[in-house]
Image 1 (cartoon, helix red, strand yellow):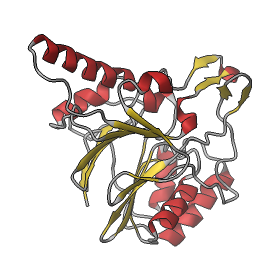
Image 2 (tube, helix red, strand yellow):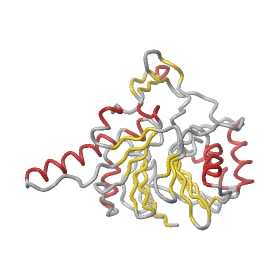
Image 3 (cartoon, helix red, strand yellow):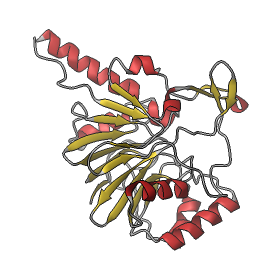
Image 4 (tube, helix red, strand yellow):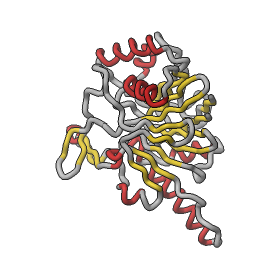
Length: 285
């Protein structure tokens, strides 16, 4: 498996990539190509071009959850596809050879707000109806195997007592309800050495997410965990519970990024092998 971080809050030192408070990761495994989240803007496209990654040839786009820093780059991706097809039509060439799949939790495309902060829309700007015109849309609460070794984890079971206790904003339907981010999910990839887990923001809890991956894949070994851990300003209960969990888990390495603060990374580095992550990072397993 090959993994490339296209967008993160940070960029690699002395590498000229764009960064933004968002996340997008490219994954290549089992002869298939996947885009996990699209960041906030078109920056992920520019970084992909610099890395020589063609996002016109994707098998699927996977959405970790519906927040703006993971979905608003969809506008740029839709423009890329539309302009490509316009240009091909002008020269009588066929359009894209395939419609990529899009996999997400059903709640990932719902309208979300954060009224207590005076914010309007913080969810996806595209409805399921509009996205279905560009993608083969697959909305699922259940796990979905995307290839022989890569799985979409579906709705994460929240089983421990120190994570995922707070709401973030509201879901807007006919009535407005607190948003517990039930759409938050992740990917897991089986390798000969164990599992690689790719997380978006881990609103469901990074420890809950890992346990779900272990159950679905039937493997207790963790090679790497890449992505956001939702440890920006954790409560002491959440931070201590997470540290105890990782001290017992002992993954081979971790690449915590996006919504993981420096203070949390320092604490994590005291119990596990934590390596630098940022836009432009390429990992192979």
